[in-house]
Image 1 (cartoon, rainbow, N blue to C red):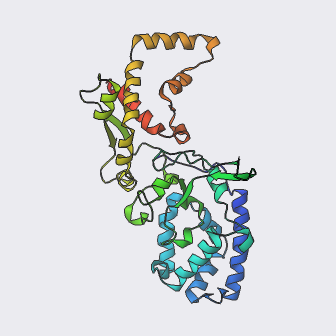
Image 2: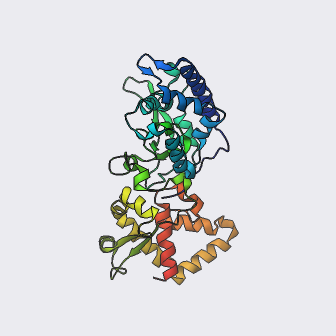
Length: 336
């Protein structure tokens, strides 16, 4: 689990455009008392949406920081008890407003569009923040089709509604409730539709650092064995306080099972560690970095040798960066 942030300070222009169009349409619905003949506002629904349209409450809902979302939910449920009843008229209207005409909005149907791609692009992470194993970078390009023409290809992250949009539809377009992630973590083998108010996992937007869980390895008596033997015997250990938020994250995303698939890489890291302890390596690196004509610094050496980043702020750039760094630092500190 690694922390993520939005790069843009304040409202992203595309998000502001969505908000303006969404609010205007909502004002019209509230004034008429309905969205359509099938979607009428009852008294509680009218009271709720009039509250959101008062002052800055709606924009505050969309921009509420991740760490304040639990308190916001409790506050809204106290003020509007029907938000706790899944099949209440208020919840049904919320799903139409915030999901059908919010998250799933389109220019053709609504006159505005929810900026999913823009929000993904604005998050400072190229890898899944839940598992740190998979690239989620948004890329577009063109390739030839069967008829000799061109088609546009788009590859991007999934957006996980941290608080599930079916249970908390009023948070469906709140940007800190939308976590770019990989299909594994967002699917049945990961968080899927879990109610985080019950499971108690951490929102990556609310994390200050990645220290809540740490990786290490146990090579037992196989440390000096050939790589093929070592990668079979090596044990990957994930340390975290029992009962902590990270304990819940590890279990929800099945991280122990997933990282046990990387024993070959863990074995390589151990061999890299052994190599870095030799005098021959130290002499070579000293000569290389002191040679100004090489253009190679200590940071370059680390990345070339380990294939990853040393600084925690860069863990969001490459799969397995935290895994690699944690293991190498633990081996270095314990002198194995």
